[in-house]
Length: 239
Image 1 (cartoon, rainbow, N blue to C red):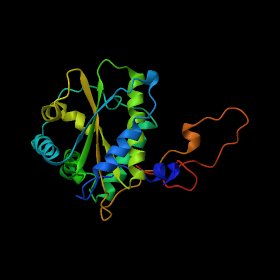
Image 2 (cartoon, one colour):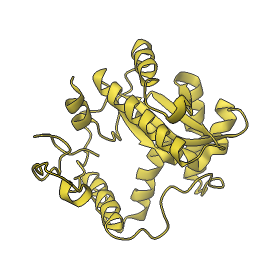
Image 3 (cartoon, rainbow, N blue to C red):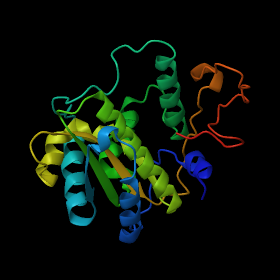
């Protein structure tokens, strides 16, 4: 699989089979992902890989909190800016509407929407979860490095025939996560990455991307390519 195919086929999978993830594949992916760029070679990521009993225990504890309507722990970082303006507000709203529509959930069905969100803490059925932490003393540049690391992991997973779903939702119950994985003091849980084989029978929404002209400005003599809405020549957009 070349890099364009990996980028085009990567999507946020929200329905996995229970087929185990080969340990050798995870070893290859995480070893290669260590080559992700980071300023000053700080490599600010701290990663925990959960499968089997530890993952089942974490799913159980977080699912119980979600089902009880627990709003979560104090936030360690802000997921989204408050009151995002245009076009960010419209993009987020459209993406959510497409996902719920694919699941057959009506706009006013609050209970079904809550259940769909709660599936985050069951890893959408995935048998493997990667939890990514960062030292609380790191700055914005290191958080950007963390994002590049996770993207590298996700693309390498595609090369192994695996899919993933990046989930900031795990940070909502970061204290429960810490009870299971026991990270050192001073680390902030950024996100989890559910990993496994996609369930081909499950419905999903392919989320559009903004046209290239909406997000990229070319200066100089370079010609502007096609509409660029798909992120690659002839490739479909993904979520």
